Length: 221
Image 1 (cartoon, rainbow, N blue to C red):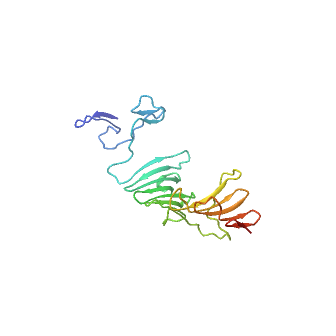
Image 2: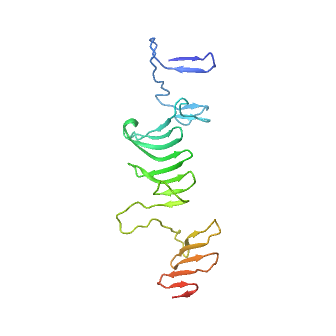
Image 3: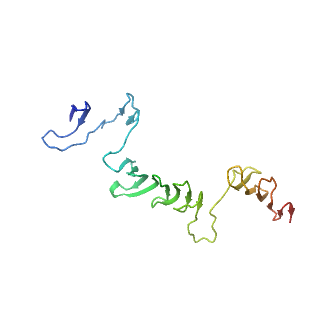
């Protein structure tokens, strides 16, 4: 192992290689028998404890990857390229030969994609550059675009809206041009009735009770 100081910058350096005249470099092991390593701190609390900003990557390369692994060799990684950041995981004993899954993909100035269903991830939700949210679609055309995948079931309920279960609590969907100025409200009052209200009126224009009776404009049928 060699240690020295660069004449042109004054930086100190450490390099591990065999002193036999060859140019072969070797790994440098820090604390192989245990103990923490601190950078910018005199009291490291972790195996590697860095006080201050940290950079991972190579300025001469278009891509860089930060790997994290567990005892099963299932690696978690953060991968960055010119305009994409991917958070993912691998299944196998080596990254190069493993199955790669990417639960989160962020493409600069384009979209953010959330993938589910490991193993074999597929996109479940996307936020595009216009702020539109797509669930079940990769091309949302409105603020919230919901598409249900094809199913062999005879019935399909793409959206559930629930309250917190409190007695008499209203659970509703409000539709209008801006927050606080809704024009239409469709909802349900627990253990009582379903209703539809239009405008800012406090009365329900249309209501269906649990007994099956319905009210229109104040008249019950």
